[in-house]
Image (cartoon, rainbow over all chains, first blue to last red; front, top):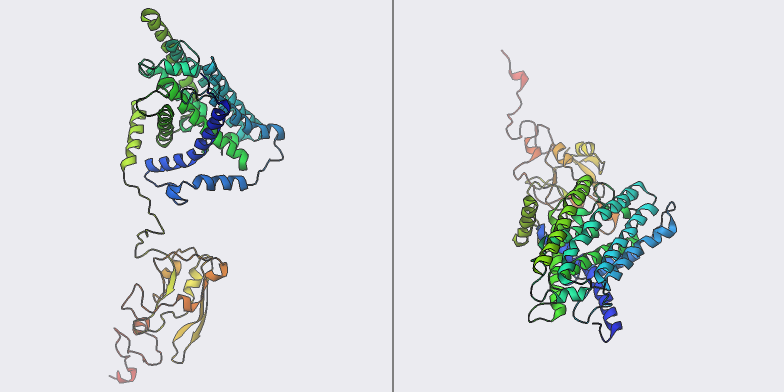
Length: 316
Length: 171
């Protein structure tokens, strides 16, 4: 099921992903402000919407400084890696029937692979900065990704067992009668937590941890290179929210409204939820993070796969 | 686990609460009467300058932003020849107001002093002097001080009895 005009849907998805990621700067600041009883940016344009433009102009005008002690090549490549890997993942994200860049039969595996590659960006950035805080941030990112990647994949296996396919459009089609969030609720919770860790959002932002590590892996970055990390993070949030709605909430499925609208509504709901978590939760200690990952989440994910498999074998 | 969910729920409920931000240029914040803002020099109820140019404010100022020169008028009443406050240095600590023996220098609830040029923040005496007595409406230093000036002899001040003529104290 590919679109008759593949170029159109490729362009559409890339532009939409970038626009949404950029406007998330505004969305996040306004929502955070709402939950902290403030207003947030409301001066530039209507409701402060032009804040995105102002931020973009500011970040483009900033000095793009490469520290003399940094490993130049890696330092430049690192922010591009996160951008590329996240954009690659958008290729398999089904927005609506036919609106997908590439309907891979292993779409889910491709998404997992690309989001794992994203950690290279953070680790290389931390390493090439030649700065102890950046390096600690990069190390934390590596350890965190390693431990959360494992059960991220496992938490999705229940969905794969139920849908019988790794292809994302097929997974959406399999949810016609019931969203997978109901039979796969533990899987949903685990994937949500793993997705948070994957995007390095606030309860799991130990790689940047501005209260301990200056700014972690991107301490030495400025100008548009920093902007790339920033937009990369927001695109990651969009991607994970989109994946949650595709895998557990029936993607484009929904009454009355067209599929794209349903998909966007669900995605925005989870983006807002990510922001809510940022407003509400503190950052755990690093050893807590690791021990939850390995001692709680991983066994839970395994048990979920085991039970789902047994149930499918028994009644499926 | 339950506490985490409860936290998320309570934070979510804040979406329906009143926002505490004061939208400043449109909506002015409440400033207490004793707010320490722009410095002024006040006058007596009868219109004379209160400042006696004693320099205590300049001494008390931790950033040395007050400069003044004392002089005397024909009545022997001291007043500042010039009085200059450099507001680009002033930290609005209020020590000058505390030091002032005549309630002349006072801080007011006004902070909107933005300027494009730094030198415009140097206020001269005509910028600082106001027409009224400020926070102390009835107070007149020269009426209560025991100092003799033109138009007020010894013993004519408020709460003061005329000086005793020591030669009349004969046994």
